[in-house]
Length: 505
Image (tube, rainbow, N blue to C red; front, side):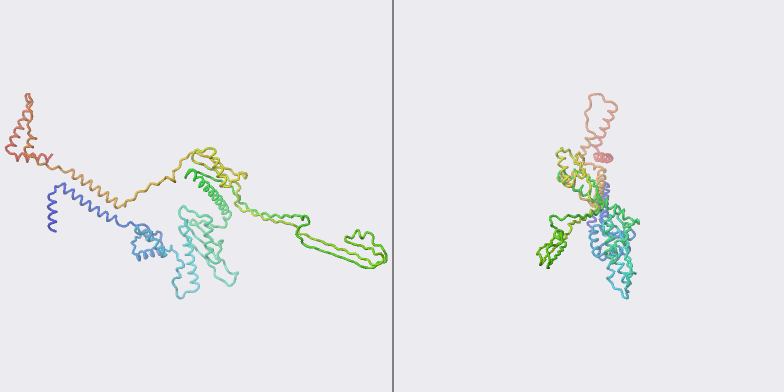
């Protein structure tokens, strides 16, 4: 160990001052990089749950401690953070175990038995549990952020007249930018009513966080109008989507625009008609048949009879037997037929289509025969009846669309480099540049050259011009000769002087 330390000291002593500074800067940079990696390499925390009640926060922390998952508290203890790579796994695991409960208590309240509990206490716990379970169920709707349910269960009475109906109220907090449809409001009312004995949807009041009653009977007519507009919009959307889906298979994605205007009849009508048909050719439904028969037999004293009897009594048969025996018979038959009758009840439901107006725009420049083919296809697909007053307009015009579909590939997003590595790499690059700058600023070492070569450089002979020298030229020539003579007599001293000059330069 001592040898290693001594070797390092000797190596460090041989380095020049600039080299020592560069090595020190490099070692410091490496140390800072390691420290930065250690700090940034710690797990990044993300929100596991937020907006927790104190009870739910405590339950979540206890569950995390039991599973050995590191956590942090934020927002005054109402939010719990866990490492980024464990958020979803931990959330699923806690949800499986029923944590958090959302600030409400469900039927798990009956997991424990209380000694000395009365029937009234048990009924109150049941009411709490029922409210909690309904709250959890309503929170599952996508547009709802939070909900509270209050149920009023009347006291049971032996007298039917004294019994009061159950009632409930629901407070909803919607997510930002979300809105409930009337069908969803009715669904919530039916859900609550079906979960409570003796509760009807009319006795369920639903209120949003702004204090607006969503299912008030005072707005029944307005609600029906809203339902009609929604029905109209959905019908138009269905036709538009069907037209676009059909034509995009031919002209490509984004190359078709369709709009539909439907006029619907929301009047409800009931019609009753009764038709009678006469009996034809003696055929019909026999209602009743009456038959009457009469006969007489006796003696007479003379011929004759009542004038006009045989002509006025139908079915009368007179036999003139002279003086002796008289006989006559009479028969009648009456047949009653049922009248032929047809009853018709006709009920017209609201929402009947009275007329349709369809417009279709296609990207490009189509020929008239192509436009006619498209028009015919749309008429057949949507069931347009031009005799009813329906109309259709098909046109083509170039318009800009983003190509999407076959042959179009989304650019592959590059993989994100972790932030700690980016920071460490940037710091290392900066340190490398600093080291290069320090090393390049140090003086170049003086090369060991032979003394003679140095002297040749300094006092090398020059060719004298073939003219008379000036006084300055004569002085320089004199100095060169003195230096040359000094170098020949004391070469070591001259060499040291030249090295010092080179170092200073």
